[in-house]
Image (cartoon, one colour):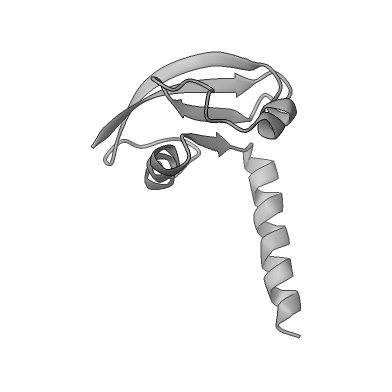
Length: 96
């Protein structure tokens, strides 16, 4: 399977990217997300396949999100790590 993806960068956060199916553009992205994302600046078009490597995202997660919701939000590495740490802390607090 392959997906042609338009990738946009955020005008508000230089490390935030939004992957969309090229044929859909931003049509499937929720308005609330777009307000936080800011102006979507086209960055590149990529052909995504299961064997393609991405620098900061898992290709299988990106492709699954594009199939299910029509978009994938890539957060900057530091923000992503902070969110993962918060999720782990939340899970640990449920254990006690």
